Length: 254
Image 1 (tube, rainbow, N blue to C red):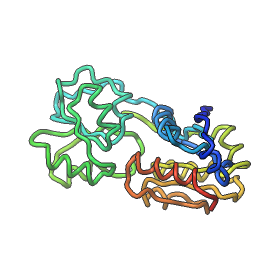
Image 2: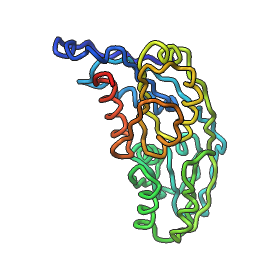
Image 3: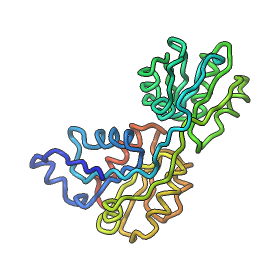
């Protein structure tokens, strides 16, 4: 269990605290991503609320080494495809078309010439159409994917192959998160339909005391079957959903 302690409030912040002091934000992303989200939510100027980390997915590597010799570029929809793959034979500065700045940053650190699309498959396809010239693309992905990116690439006239390089294994809410669901109003930022489904199964026992799910998209919201408060981020980006989560957690009771 990871618990984040926030900085001491000044007197004005203390006055603002009434009405949201019983809030807990529960981050369910895999550990590396969860730690970054917690750091964002506990940054300077943030109101005091408890932050717990309870990953609902564990990333398990499946393909330790990838042969890139027959491909002109890679397509990446998650930084996990970079973090858990051996690219020791990668051509220097091979292009990588990525969803999101986080994935692009991981790809650049691995030695790719990374291009970042916005946080959607449609934006990724548009980026590849706009910037890719010749050669086959290799889409590296997890076992469970919300969209058929390889099919979208082929439909766009961009020949591609896909390789599953990691699995996303479901995990249970930890004891601290389960306790919080009983005692405190919890706010869950959720980034994928699969995580929403797992959370609904894991949190079915929780009493109706005003829990909220903050969703990256309407697709995520539609996958969550419990009758909680539900909000959808204005934009499908990490910063947008975390700002919304912070505002919900710091705001007055619903």
